[in-house]
Length: 460
Image 1 (cartoon, helix red, strand yellow):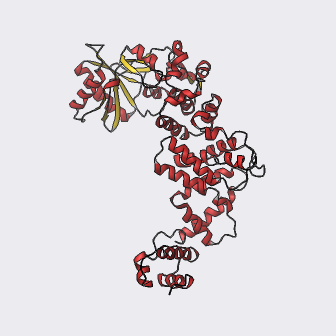
Image 2 (cartoon, helix red, strand yellow):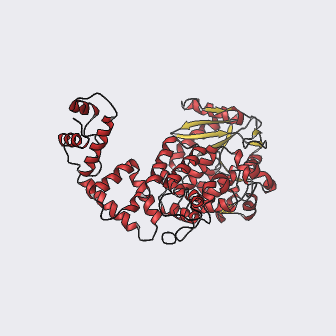
Image 3 (cartoon, one colour):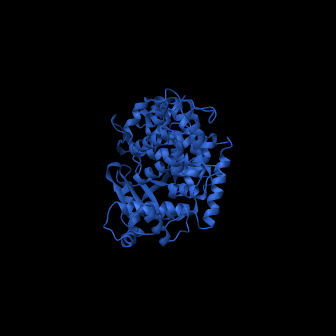
């Protein structure tokens, strides 16, 4: 079987082989790296399993080998994880993880197992799916398929649990594997084998033993796919969506005015999600942009209006992103996009240039995402042409240098000097009034602005 290793990993593997032959180790590329080689996908992560030829029970084989290769090629000290017998090391700019063959033992309260040295076969069966349980021997480039189904499942595009004899507990032990199965199904274009899918329907509450950060990471990967709605529908089918994103699950069957939307809020949300580009802030904004309609539905006795849900959606989005441990800056961007995504829908040709500038100022650095979400929210109703007209007007103003007024026309010191008054809240009021004047007339001079404000605010 002819295996071709991508150029960016060839030098790394050569260094590993040199050290393995010299020091008496057998090394194997494992997991997703091997799978990706077979499906013609560029591998992202290189995990290397290490066996000490002279002592197959050497629990520190991976750690010791990482130190030896680091010393041989002057790579710096590896990061060591003693509990799991693993180490990470940067080689030629790529992070490589070195591990030992291992068995795992789980406690019901945690998805993090205790480990001990095992055989290659035992290590293969502890892995999640057959397609991720292939080993590539770097010493002779042989492929080892201990499950006897990995290669065939790649050929048939199937995701199947690696150890069918352990099927009753595999997802219960580590429910993150459920999210991984859903995500990899979407990512690889594979279908989930029937029995595996059935076993994924463990008690939904079991997902609570998974840290929010790990759930967040899987959601991010799902949102990066071409059609993320398929993953959320699958999560809903196995009753997991209500546990990880109840704010989305509860939007099912919430009807909207037919004048604007033919779908309920849930299905509309998923369609909007698929219509956006796979940029994380935009995709997350699309996922949560209508989340506030649930509360609007309750408050209005079952009626959802076209406008007015944005602030509630911003609040709910903030709660979701905080719960899933997203960075504060990311949450702020998502909130800004959701808050302003209805603004472009109010556009009409009667807007003056000042109104266009006012929108651009409110949108700030999130302008493109706000426009993209608004356009996706319209879908094919015809309203997207309105967004196109607004974009065209903004581009014309930008070309003329009359759209975004970045620099402050008058600073606080200049205002104090001009009015010859002590500091106070009035300075902020003057600044705001000057900015409003500039929105109406971006060519206004500093002197004109100060004199106009003096008259408007009746400052002596």
